[in-house]
Length: 391
Image (cartoon, rainbow, N blue to C red; front, side):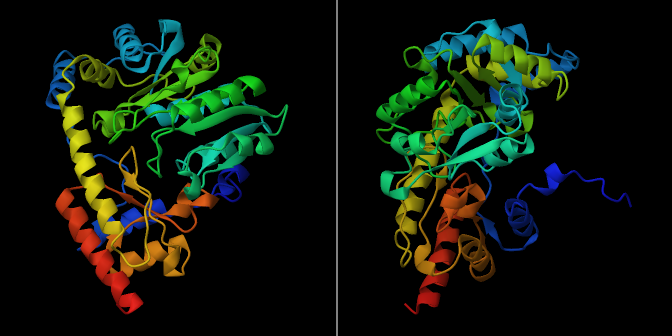
């Protein structure tokens, strides 16, 4: 066994409980998992057909480092039509999912010790990615009382002048389901311009918004094209997580730096995936709307059921496919609540602290699983909590 071979960088990363919880859920008989952030739908048939045809044509060679020309053209049209963002080929890089785009963007823009503002609670990879690069994560507390919307006045107090380079935002949000309002986005835009920040706008759940909520890309706001890197993924929108396909749109100099770095990471996004992605963007969008409607049906049910659990409450999510109930009434830490539910109700959930310090007192429930399974899981949760409460 090699001694001392593991880097201090790796040792400093937090130990995630998600992997352990999901492993138990997968191996345990009778356990219902509300943990995964992965669509339970199959990729649309036209997308699968495009992938099969690409393989039949033996399209198995490398693609250009920044992405195929035809894929980029489809992205450029999509961004203009759906997001209100004007872009050219030089503004696009195709990546292995949006997670790789986040990593490349941060490698390209921050040096050791420089600050990156991250939402808390927020997607679990943001802070560790900054830490891996020896950057300085600056937590932006998102409070339930404020609908988990960012408070720019608070951000002004937290920013480290001359040291902060990047601001990460995520709308619709994982884990809270919050959709940022236009007013908040405009305030964030002003803040970013004033402090010379690059905004990494993670919009992986852009298609999944409900009721009167509307997704707005901050990159579409007036004058923001030089300040925003917009990140998109096919994993959620088109139920294509295994294709590992995403893209980033942003300032030419940052995209150029990311392209240079891409050679030393994955080199390029998979060719077959890009061909399938072209069909996803250009083909019929009915499958996406059907998924959105079904997620909405599940959303309404899970929020109703959560609020029937003694002592629990839940802000109604406007987007994504997660509920983020407040479980402080249980009198336990979030991790302990998740472990208790796994043991007593045989339901796998994710503790809120996986998403940051401000996630304490919450758990995340994914409704990217079958309606009937969610119903059964909530039956078990309610029964277990009522028994514990003596009701």
